[in-house]
Image 1 (tube, rainbow, N blue to C red):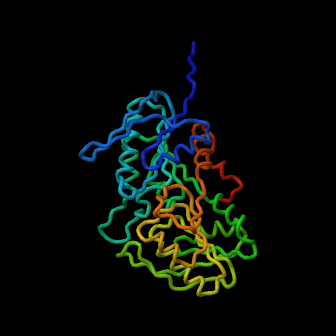
Image 2 (image 1 turned 120 degrees about the horizontal axis):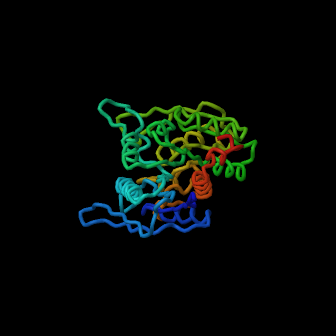
Image 3 (image 1 turned 45 degrees about the horizontal axis):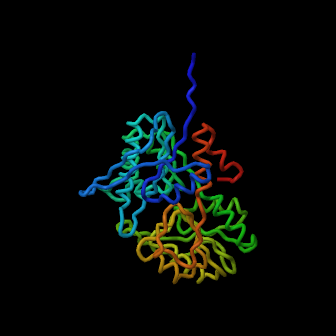
Length: 328
């Protein structure tokens, strides 16, 4: 007689952002699984699951972030790898790494000689622990998917951000702006979905310096419009704030900035608060400590999109169907 084993889905959280993991689990009517996470005196990380995972599809949620006064992005990457290794050794049927923000994503190619391609190195580490599938949201460059041999679900926050624009900016006032040539394709998607014109900021970047860029001019008509700057992340906010100032100089009536990932490193919060930007709209792919928040910040929840993707993977359904009709 054939024995039919019922499929099981389990969700576990690393320690970088347990609040998001709980929110995703709540959307699915589930609880976050029990796992003991600790750190030895010498800094080595430890994980032990407090319940059986045998035969389960185990999802491990962890955003790659550095927390003020706490663990670093490197710690959180290793912690997720340790958890995935433990799950594989405990006979989980499938292990799925859910990485709302993928660390080292900006190091996806060599710009100068003798540089690493760190995004590929991170991919190799995940494959080395036998991960069966990876999920992430709005990668800095889509080519990172090709660094993995395993299935990669590239989710997008575009439906959330587009909906915010539709709810808050009149159609006749909109112009969607790319802060540099590298974001043109993303901006075209937003502009196409909204039926809005677009503009591009011409920018020169010094490849020998990180987080340093100079905006030179605006290509496109922004005078009297609400300029909507689109990017995948806001790190130190120097680029986005400089872009907003230039747009105002060229006659833009209002400036909004939209991005998926709120890294908000160093002087970012103060720069945004002092800038020409009226609203900074981001998602909660990363935790935002109180000291990095500003009155201009609007945070949209990515949890419903993550929950739908997890459910689709568990039920062996198409993840792309989640975004059907969203023009993404």
